[in-house]
Image 1 (cartoon, rainbow, N blue to C red):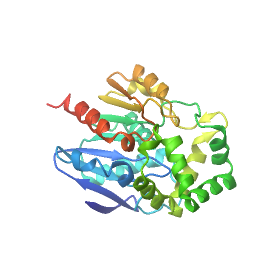
Image 2 (spheres, helix red, strand yellow):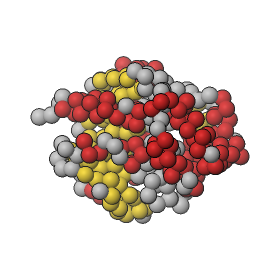
Image 3 (cartoon, helix red, strand yellow):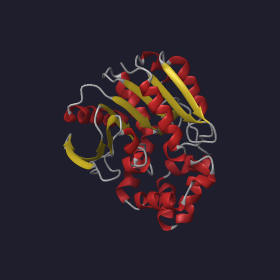
Image 4 (cartoon, rainbow, N blue to C red):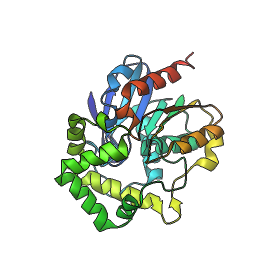
Length: 280
């Protein structure tokens, strides 16, 4: 069920279903939203959990903020949302940018029942994107041209999904391209992504990286990653698992960056098994 509430002065849209222990599902940046990443799996989760999946400001159906948010501000917004919902303790799961926000939240000492990092950003400092996308992200006109091309031509969008986001091109269906295209057409989504990524990618590497702090994560943690992720390499996840004390690492074969959409059944199996393993 779609719901909305005012959080820190922003109208936030979120999906909600089920009852029981709460689990928050956080989506990523770029061509993403709560519905895009988690729409297919919420019903299954809702059989055993109280599921909440918010749209970040500027994404999905949430209000665009007066200024673009950085990772620290997203983390503050997450805390405000959890307080506003009256949730004492939650299972926290985040994909890509959402993973970095979830990790930052835990490192700040906020109480969670568990942490699940899905193709998570924030696990390494090194920029790992091909040269052309890297230049495009740093040069406003090139970045705008790339996004304009995706809005103008679904074939370009399909190419990016098939060969940069997914590991197996055949897993990118026409219906998925149509879903993503509706998000790409929203001008505020483009602005939110471009502003965030330009703030994160620097000449010497990524701004937000937590590898030196991973030993401070004191909650059960599932690190879930695609073996063929070319956006955030699986090596980052494997390295992180060495330092998080209660980490469980799962690297899925034949899977790219958008793990939740490429292998939803394996995603559900791994996360549900992980959560069930330490229930009272």
